[in-house]
Image 1 (cartoon, rainbow, N blue to C red):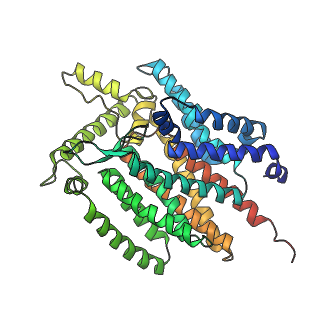
Image 2 (tube, rainbow, N blue to C red):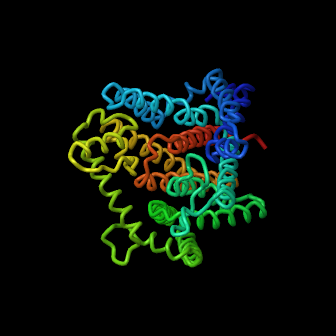
Length: 427
């Protein structure tokens, strides 16, 4: 990274447009405004178009593809296109691949290519925390129960209106609120606001009745305890235990019963939850079956539901006609095993890079900036682990969340490499 890149005024303008784009995407603000205004204001075009233009003009693409996670994501995208000619519905698969390139994968490059300094990384993290705060407010003001008999929380509109999808999105953004609770140098009023929003956000996640999100929260908490020093482990475990019991006591009985139901064979289960678990197990088995029947290119990007339903009909069954509810087998069954390997490779390479930055930050002198970097790395790790776990139960393989976290990791790695390689100013 060159100093002229950092000080390039066009790149700086592009950074602010990218920041706005990321905020809008994570909050789904464009969808909320469309519903409330009654027409589409094309907010993403107003902020995304200039951001992409400045990304290209200032060499952001070249700065991005040097990194291993970007190469894996590009291979994943390329294999999606390679799977189109053999798709069971080629035009629909091509549309999905093109949309993924244009609106989802682009977030990776906007963050990795335009966020260069640690100060810009910190500003990005602040806006992600604000996005989490907005999502908590949306969950409070724009949510409703599925039905009087089913008290699960869902948003009233938007692509994340599904209870499980909203819960997964909350799992990925809540750690950014945690960051502004634990990071040094944060004003007390912001620390308090972030802490209260985090607690209420946890309640909203549990109120969706999403068992996948509950598992993701448990895995994330265990990972956090593993990473923390001994004293912080004890304090964290005590705090989480009290908080969990408190939040659990406020949930409706139907929700707590559902959350305890992890399989259709559990005793004393809610029948709706048991049927859901049974259906998901069927879809998992079918996705694995199609993976091994079509290991190279799968049934076509986005075509699992149609292919499963048609196959079941040919075999004299009704079929489910639903997505896989597992992002990993969604990729393998729809785009083939190579696409699955690229997808997992992007996840693991991002995790390794993030872990490297975290360990290096912990080894630096404990200045305010270095302690913030360590806290930021930990919280991005939590977001990454939580979402990577939650998509074991959701069909979100073609969304921007994981590429966005890869882009953020790359930006932090590059910024800290530059920060720690630059000698301090002479006193």
